[in-house]
Image (spheres, rainbow over the protein chains, first blue to last red):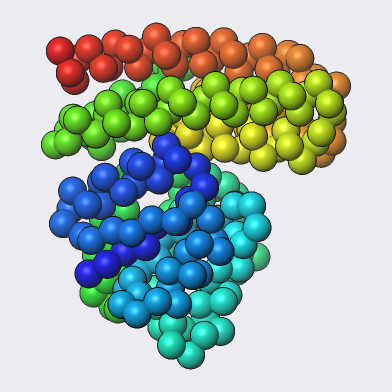
Length: 121
Length: 116
């Protein structure tokens, strides 16, 4: 099971990458939405996308919208991880992502979310 | 005063992979000065968008270590950037620098515990 992690903030990206690898998943990373989109266009695309929301250029919400609009990728689960807690609790948040998680996350919450989404993939 | 780091949550994350701490600590040690430089330049030039972006990145970096007071200080500057309000930025920057000092002190102690 390959997971794509997307975050422009290197500390959080490194932390998530090492943690998720430690749990036995194959991980690939991208530091912005455009790079993530290019990875998703290749053969053997990741089965789950875990992405930051606020990134320069193509952000996490726009990346999710592109995934949903693409016939080949539309069913790929997306977990948005954001430091903006208010966004996650707001009724007005976009609903195209499968799940949302607030930074700093609890490892058990992150692992549970990944397990749910990879089982559904 | 609120602790610089929520140690329980950090150790919960690192309990079965202590070497991870050192790798991420090195990333933080590189990222914080980089974003502080961007923040100071944005304040000097009164660039609201650049201030919000740099403060947001710094906030995300320190939040990864459950450094909530420091993340909150960065969030204050981020919001000032978003609202183009530079009136209280010298005080907000001073508070962020104080919180970063507390963070480094605490992280050095954690490092000694995890990697003696």
